[in-house]
Length: 413
Image (cartoon, rainbow, N blue to C red):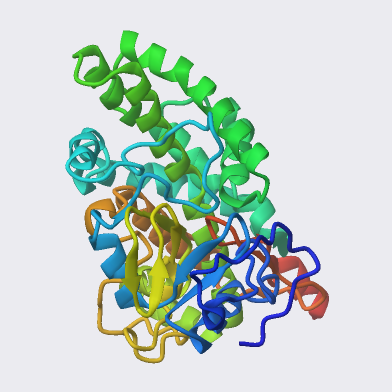
């Protein structure tokens, strides 16, 4: 398949004897070749090989590369459990996050606790706040004519989540660090510590909500605890789940959105000419630039697409790669805002479909609308370039942008 060892790759282990040699790939998902230049194309190269492959890195794990297989694995909760849902497996003492780590029927019972506060009807009243915060951040930089988008905007979705969850905005930098570490660090010790620190942080939030419940997400969890329906351990685990889910994924999505629009004036003109297209554009951009690398734990020896998967082995499910499967989406690398709408995999599928998508979608749509209203013409900095990264959540860690301002127009004259 043409993969070479990255000089930064580490943690390669032995290949188990039951793994066929032709299914082994030299692929560390934290640092796959080409990730800094184009994260999605770096992963897309896996489509050149078998439908399921084995990586000896990060404790060893399988990778399902095709949409239908990823869907089938996510649906078969008896064979593929969610008890370990990211690679590598958590070290002992790492806090659980539920309902992500639960299988049916326990999963549905816990998930129901957070459905109402994250339902579309509950999120809709937040749109004016989302628009106000997005517009204010854009206005702050509009006259500068340049920015590193990630440095300026990576914390905006986190700020929105904190305001929605009634968490003091002064804690923004602290909680963003938790999220960044869990999503992209290749250090198990650092990821574990970030989860432990976040759990301690959330203890105080839950204690407050138990005493003074409101209408926010953490109050919904605390009220179930007050009613004796869940334990404090479960309460804290649910809080950890929604906390990490709400802090990082939208920021990562915005990095891909702005990088694409910076390189495609044709798509920008489409959106400016027809602002109503922003909702369809949001869905298409979410499809094209997926984010998550989830996993499932095999519960018993099973045969899958010619591979023997042993009990307790992990199967990685790169949802972004499912979105780029030409067997599922015609010309998948092309962005077409008028593409016939079909379900993408960016928020998962089946019982574990992300309920936070109801908040993510309006955040991305409103950002697109407000950015193009304020800065319709912009491009990547010709003297610099974006830098991509991989992990549990795909992202750019730098996106340098430039655009004309009144000052530059006067200077040009």
